[in-house]
Image: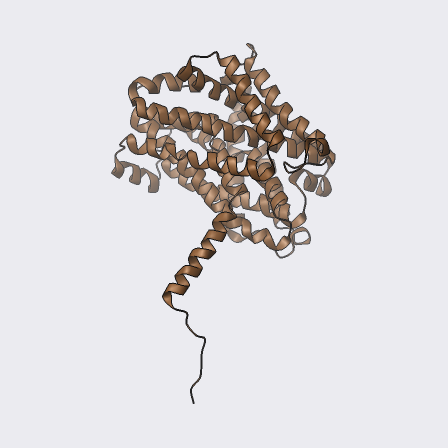
Length: 423
């Protein structure tokens, strides 16, 4: 008697099915990938390059360690939004208090607007160096282009543009290759942790971690996932998108640190903003490397500014119960678009003010973010493990372990930043 088991498909058929399945997964990439790219904004590029210039390759291992922390945090934020059907501000109001929500959103908005100003300045500064036009005029033009895209572009158009900009940031990987770093030293510092006791190294480590984990990324991805995914069963689909986005984000940061270390380490340059960095890089890095750096700054700014302004608009709209979403017309979501556009123009206005420097804007935005990050991670940990709210979609062991680790790290970060601020 012959028992007929399941018929095994031919190898060619299985390969075709795998390719088709992966194509579908790639088509679904969106919020996570955009979030990852937006994490490497011009302010982040300066930070990572300065880290490389100041500490060489010694912090590459810490960047590798931060990747699972980012994945865990962004996964929780996205899944909470999809399962509950509510944004982070709505959930905070429902489970805790409206006052706490308003306080959180106020800190987020101030930090985001300061960062928007710094990022717009970075774009305008690079364009000024390349073209010779006045920075103020370029600032207005760049802001206008982004506003036009947001107001007149449909959600799918905006999404495609942002994904395209995210892909272009791969120029930093090319830049790292052109820098010809010592591969053995890079690999050793990536996988073998090093610890240094000097203050400059510790400050660089804290600055790097503070740049990789940002509050606005949590708000943006959660809002975009909720806008795209209408069914609870899609909650488990966010994992692939988030993993790809966070790995891409830290791969770019990895390349930036390597470039800074290979070209500038040990030279003793004073690198505080994008202007000083660009003027230092141009003569020592070569024309091709400088062009790639300049292109990356412009592209990263065009990607990050809408995400910063968008996360602010989503958060404010959800706090006060306004209609929100890029897919809505301006007439249907006036409050949302007023905050969206207003955040960019206020950021540009702050940037043109002689009383606030770009370095000050970045410093105070980091202080505000440092105050907010531990609170957000703590809230998400509690909500993600609340079976009454999440049902069968509670946080995994991986998410709990690395989110708790991120909470402890960011609490330490906050303590150091507040100590420096007060003293």
